Amino acid sequence: MNKITIAIDGFSSTGKSTIAKQLAKHLVYVYVDTGAMYRSVALYALQNGFISADHFNQEALILQLPKIELSFKFNGDLGYAEVYLNGINVEKKIRTLEVSSFVSQIATVSEVRKKLVEQQQKMGEDKGVVMDGRDIGTIVFPNAELKLFMVASAETRAERRYKELITRGDEVKYEAVLKNVTDRDYLDTTRKDSPLIKAIDAIEIDNSLLSIEQQFDKVLELAKKAI
Ligand code: C5P
Picture 1 (cartoon, rainbow, N blue to C red):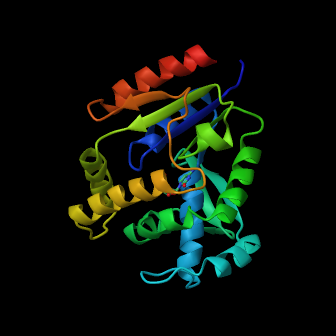
Picture 2 (tube, rainbow, N blue to C red):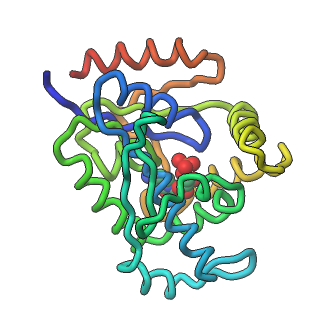
């Protein structure tokens, strides 16, 4: 069967990864979570003291970029690939509210974007890939055969993320999660390099009122038409 590239973009916590994982599993495609890559670079910057609440040493981070090696390894139990930063599995560490609150600043740095976009394009060069992020349909794969743009209200998204974090055992307040979601929306849509925008040929999916099953049925239909 003909293999295509599926690009899924959208605001934070719109359920991009849920639908991307379902699609990849169903179509036996590779799933690439590009947010995990930006989060891993943010974790590296935090671990090395390049970023904190009151400073961001961009130059130091840029100089260290060649030393940052990101890779994905498929975890059969989970059914998707986990991200490794310099050989260490950081899948859990990158999902904290702390990393979430610095990652969008890291993602404004053009040198960081260039490095990650190159790696993403390599990972998808043979097609048969479902990639989610903010610039997949616009920058990484502008020729993707299917482009989806996910939206949902900020409150719906914050509630989802809050429940996820609480289930993991993180002590967070709903208000802090909502603030993080709206702060990241702002940074992601207003940055100079590759801002989050809907590609003109992307299909918008508002899943505020859709169940996970309804969303999957709708998207699978679109994928089948595109293949
Ligand atoms: O998708 P996720 O919420 O994990 O992404 C974390 C952050 O990484 C986003 O808020 C955004 O700042 C950045 N990002 C990006 N481009 C991508 C994927 C993520 O700028 N392709």
